[in-house]
Every structure is written in structure tokens, then in C-alpha cells.
Length: 287
Image (tube, rainbow, N blue to C red):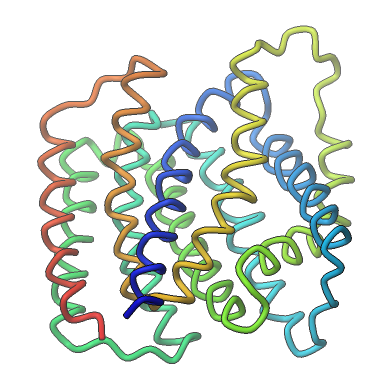
């Protein structure tokens, strides 16, 4: 029970850190290209992760773990950051953060496929109902008007759910911060040259908010958040603790309104509240 409670606490801290990711990305892509932002944040976090691995003398992962680390990197180091950065060129961060409501269902599905978990049937009913609330909101908000941004966000949450479940599965044996550090290091030979190739011709026009956004997504979103998140998923169960992601829209709405002066309407709040209510029911039947 103590381990489970620790999982929920660690998971909540991870979600709180991730809540700033989309607003920070929204700010950063005003001056940086999505490709540069994705590769630069991964490269910066990889260097920090490498320093941790060397300082704490961590053993190399087993050869059998390399494929799983590659899947983790593809999902959370490359796929989600790039797809969200591209999406945020077409939609606001307040709109995009609602799509995080689909993440618990995606994570739970991959928890079954990759993690061997078996939630009860009622769990899936509640999870699907919560996801339906989010998809319904996208349709009501004018899906055709922002079709590209919405599709990019949906693709982002699918690959992210895979990366979450795969990384959490590895965290049971490697440890949470070790998994994200090795996944970042594995992607460094690709991401560092890409960052150099896609860097701006000059940095004179880059404003302070964009630099702060890049720093946040590099240090917190790409590294520190995963330290808590993977530990929480491994301790409390991937499908169960994954439901905490439904709190992220609430946090994201507040940050978008506070930092970006974006409008957060009552429909957004009502739909998210409905999704959270569904996930509260799903949590009861997660195991």
C-alpha cells in the first residue's frame, strides 16, 4: 500500500511538471522552428542525463533493453515533442492541452499490450467515456477549422502513451531517471546533428520568453518530469496512475491563461470536468 501511495504522489508531481510543457512549447515556437525545438530540447536533456549517469556510475542497460529504450525514445523524446510543436503552430496551447485527456486511455491500452496489466472491464468503459468527452470537445470547437493541429495532437498522444508504458515497464528494473536518461542518450546521435542543421541563422531575433520556454521543456519536461512520472507508473501501476493525466488539462488551462493570456472558456472546463469524473470511475476498476 505504501508503494502504491508513493506511486500516486510521484505521478502527481510528474503531471504537475508536464502541465507547463504545452504552454512553454507554445511560447518557444514563436521564435524557434518545431524541428529545432524538438532536437535542441532532447540534446540538452541528453547531456544532463549523461552527466547523471556518469556521476552516479550507472551500469549500461542490457542488450535486451535496447529495443524498449528505442521505443521509449521514439515516443517521448522525438514523437510527442515534435508532433506537439507542429500542432501548436495551428492551435492554442489551451486547446491542445485538452487532448491530453486521451492520454490515460492510450497509456492504459499500451499498459495491457506492453506491460501485462489487466484492468477490469468497467475500467475501459469509464476510460472510453472520458476520451469521448475530449474528442467531442474537439468536434464542437470546429474540427475542420483546425484539422491539421487536432490530428497532430491525436498522433502525439498515441505515441506518447506508448512511450509512457514502455518506459514505465523498463523502470521496474532500471529505475525511472535511468530509463529517461538512457533513452535521451540513445537519441543524441540523431538529435544533436539535427539541432545543428536546423538552428536559426542568427539568434538575434530570439526573445527571452522563447529561451525560457526552451529551458523549461529541456530541463523539466524532458528530464525532471520523467524522473517522477516513470517512478510513479512503476510503483502504482501504469493504467491506474496514468489516469492522473486528466488533471493536466486543469493545470494547463491555468498556465495558458496566466502566462499567455489565452481564453479558457466554460466549455473547456466543463468537458475536462466530465473527463475527470469518468477517470475517477476508471481508477476504481484499474486493478
